Length: 215
Image (cartoon, rainbow, N blue to C red; front, top):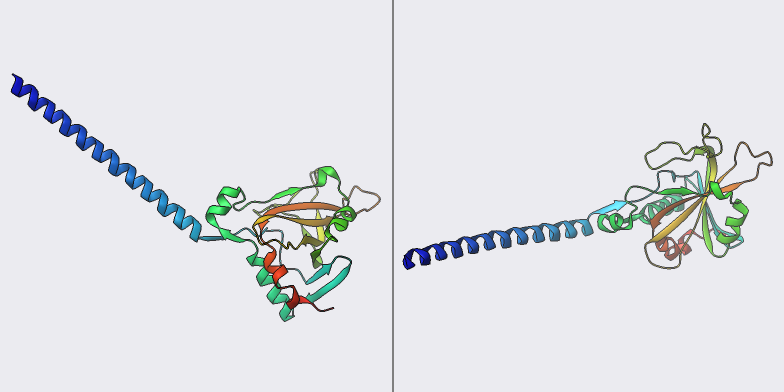
């Protein structure tokens, strides 16, 4: 009888050992899978460029109150600038995921009725950029659907200029792109500012400013 009990205890111990090994290997597999996903996520690049920021007909760079550089779409400086503009939105999939901005951006400002003149005075604290369009562009979300006037939901909003500041800090941060719009219901035809917020690092533009000087 004692021998049988010893055998049973031995079998139970072996089963527990096997179970522990299976659990350990399973956990190891999960950990390795997570490590691979993290490495891949850190290496794979995504571009968070807002859908609304289509290539303009001309680019103007301002230094406070003065025009620093200006070029049309058929110029070499324009091609160089737009290439770098695309790059400022590039980041790793992992950073984009944890920043909560993967494939999305926010449109705000209309509720506050913020005048563009107020935003412009803030932009004039340093270097900033204007994208100028010959034809009116429609304010859109990232999926291409039209942003509607919150006061008149059957109306879209259009613009011919958008603006953003160039940062002197080399880091990924929230970039605010200001779209100059006029509301159809506004009899005074004042220009207001919609704000498009997305993650970007504009330092690459600041670092290359000397290449874009035309004035």
